[in-house]
Figure 1 (tube, rainbow over the protein chains, first blue to last red):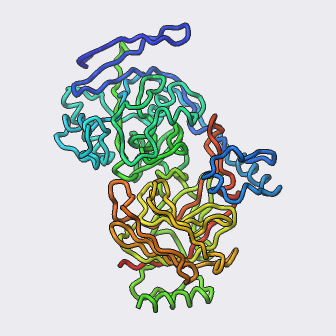
Figure 2: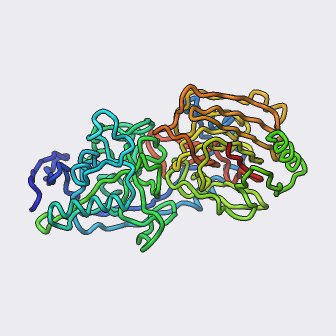
Figure 3: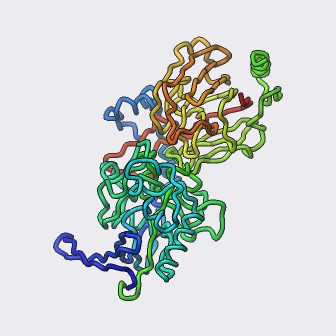
Amino acid sequence: MKARMLLMIFLLSGEATIAQKKLTNCVGMDFVLIKPGTIVIGEFKPPYPVPDDTVKSLPHDYMMWMGDGRGYNEAEFRLAKEMALQASKEGFLFQLSKPFYMATTEVTQGQWKKVMGNNPSQFKGLAGADSLPVENVSWDEAQAFIKKLNRLEKHKGYRLPTEVEWEYAARAGAKNDIPWKEIEASANLNKKTPMAVASKKPNAWGLYDMLGNVWEWVDDYYNERLFADREPPSKGNQHVLKGASFVGDVKNATYMTHAGGPGNGWDVGFRIVKDAEDQDD
Amino acid sequence: MIKLINTLLFFFASLGCAHAQLLSGFESLSNGKDLNQWHTSRTSHQGTVGNFFVENGAITLKQYPYGQGGVLLTNKKFKDFELYVEVKIDSFCNGGIFIRSTESGQAYQIELAMPGGTGSLFGEAMQISKSAEAIEIGKVWKANDWNSFRVRMVGEIPTITLWINGVFMWEVTQPQNDFTAGAVEGMIGLQSHWSALYQPIPGGFNMPGAWRPGAAHRFRNIAIKEL
């Protein structure tokens, strides 16, 4: 193990005690070990309105957006149901066979500066900027950071997560997409600036800001479809972005959102993973 | 000259031409054939795929797949400009014209929603300081037909003016530039609203009233003049 520090922490989960390995690297980035498992990608079951449903519980602003009440006629109810069921997809089961370490936070401006010696961020002038996520970085620039970090630690273990790895880690075992209350507890959304990483609640596997704060580049090329395919494209013009940003909302700051570059720039960053070694299996 | 240009544009519009001739100083943003001057936002909360195409000479926005809207953006950014566009919208659908939009669709927005707030000035995915309402729209609006919008946006702290079917609706000067990171230019965007989540989610709600199944917003004779 070439990392400077290896810690074992013990989390109580029901009656079982689970060991979660952690490590910290040469520029102070914390990682947790993500163990193999399965994930369903792209399970699309869009809800549709039914005649006895009600919208009375919606906040006033949303009522306004929806126009003068719902007012669907019978034919529209039927069509909505038909279109929703036609569009529904079971998704596909994906088996992750290898463990990996995932950074508990997005790469910060401070960490970027230590590795790269510069700071491309739009929000570098804010107080405490070293703890804000680095942003305004392209996918290629993220790769340059990773290359240099690997060189610093003299190995090839750091890389961007694949989209499946990212979503598996973001879900932390959750089968369905994330409830809105959990989004609000864990994600920096509807703001004018990013906030210091790890300011909000982590997910069940100790990962912060998987949703909100900044969009995160993943390794895969973007397929220009609603969800990932089992095999990502072998080439493309853009790469996939996950997790939405501080200008996002509960609609797109979910595990499932499969977005593509370039995004706004000033709300696009990344986090990294590190290949686990044999003893971590 | 601007008055003359607008008069001519309105003349073409009144003839019901699908393709108005391009006038001096204005740059066409719709060729009636394809979306080569446009692209889809891949990071909008409205949806990342969109269902955007040209039909009968008009840029047409629908949802795809069910419940997912999206934002269609010009490839080019504009700072100070006058935009002319003819719009035909199905009822009970929430869309809008975005001005100085970011790639993810943060923008000042001219609302398109009938019944509802067509012609209102709102923020899309951002708070704006000052909104506006087209109180007089009822006097000029042609239901289920083409209606022309002329939108002027000038200044780093923007002043925005709206005319519908050639009639002045409002002018608003914001007390500040509301854009994240202080952007002073951006894209023109056309929006179709989302109406359903990916899955039923505890605590989440859907917005079926925001877009009728199979409905469309249509746009033609889009032209812009940089000021």
